[in-house]
Each structure stands twice: as structure tokens, then as C-alpha cells.
Image 1: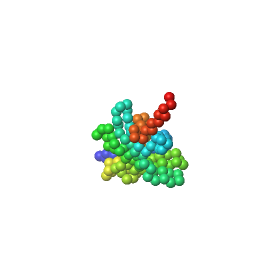
Image 2: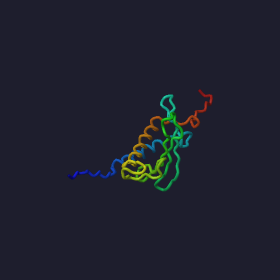
Image 3: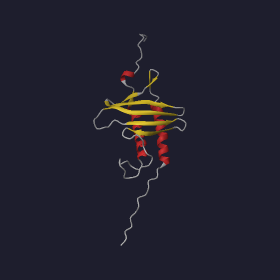
Length: 161
């Protein structure tokens, strides 16, 4: 008696979804990079929900070229012990209006498609999932991000009032 074994379907990346994520991440990063204090771009900001301190995030430019830029986004402090501090390297393509994660703190390079199962237990759509995480994290930063207290600019009281 012969048993029919269904062969697993090979994962095919959804390029529309990945492209939409990368375009959205580009717009989110643009909004986040508009934060300024005293006319200077803010590279660190704190996350607060009301009086609750949630952490601190740093953005650092690693490389700049004519049409691209590479950023390191990292949470350098968090308000609880349950969260690992994310660290993502993001390539920004200014000519295409896209931003994609090119490496994660635990992985030096993210493959577009992974065989499954694999040695590192990456999902077949790991690249999409990490870019989706970046979208969620940037939304979170836009919602709860504040300029750090030491960078806040207070108006000088000139005595006129």
C-alpha cells in the first residue's frame, strides 16, 4: 500500500507586502528624524506613556552615500526586565523611498527566504517579520517618544511680561 505524502510548498516571498512595509518604514523614519532640540537633530529620545518610563532609543548614522544611508536603531535602556533591547541596522534608499532592515542584533545578514527547518530556526519569511517588527517599533516610538530632558530647550525669561 502506497501512502501519498504531500510535499511541503516552497515559500514564495510576497514582494508587495515587503515593499509596502519598506515604504511605510521610510515614512515613519522620516517623521522620527524630524525631532529637533535647539535646531539640532535628536539622535536619542525617551519613551513615556504618561508618567511611566518605557525606555530610551538611539538612532545613529553608520554610513552615508549619494542615494542611501545606513542607520543603527537601538533601544539602549528599557523600563522593564521583560524586554530585550532591540538593535537593528536599517538601510535607507532615498531614491526609492524605502527603508529595510539589513541586520538584526542576533543576525549579521537576513536572508530573503529561509529553508525550513534550518539550523537557526529562522522562519521562511524572517525578513518580512523583522521589517514588520520595525514598523511596529517605529509606530510605538512615534506615539510615545519624547525629547530627553537634558536636550529640552527652555525659553529664557527676559523679564518682559
